[in-house]
Amino acid sequence: MGRYERNMPAISQEEQALLATKRVVVVGCGGLGGYIVEQLARIGVGHITVVDGDVFVESNLNRQLFSTENNLGQPKPLSAVQRIGTVNSEVSIKPVCEKLTEQNAEQIIAGHDVAVDALDNGVSRILLAAAARKVGIPLVSGAIGGWFGRVFVLGPEDRADFLWENESKSAFFGNLSCTAACVASVQVAETIKVLLGRGQLLKNRILELNLLQGKWEEIPLDFS
Image (tube, rainbow, N blue to C red; front, side, top):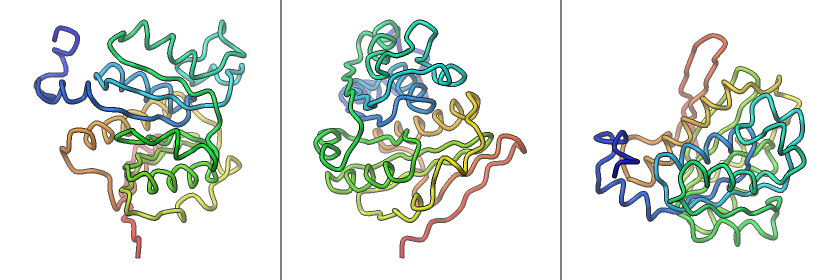
């Protein structure tokens, strides 16, 4: 247990053993996804699937954890595999170098305990949420724009497509590494809570972060 001794007592030995059996699918391996995958691996989640159809480009270097000057042009999930192999070889990490589509979404996320949304557009988020409902697993969603971010958790019973219907990149004002790391950390905390069945989830409410003003605000969600 030497690797995980500093997880304790926040996470018990029994919970640590449980995390090793869990399966999480992270859809998106960019600004949010890189930090999410690394933190999940470091905390000891045993099986992680990384889904992304993109390759690294120069503009990713400002914020994407797995992006380096040496791997520009390489598929993002493959770089995730290489990185996590040097961080925690006990973790099984599966790369899926495909864009999530209506045709493949359910097949990709089926068999996992939690899906994590690290996407960058509303259309893809709605598709992922629909697939998560269909296969019956929770979804931990995060988004960033400039100094701002948000996180919430949806159960399989929640239909919240309206949350992303008007979302577009044009509404965002750049993407900063500090915002990505902060939002990703909250998403990982929520994911671990789902896996362990502990704490109060960000369900039926959105956590809005304004790092420029140092403000965190909760917004109730109404699914009626």
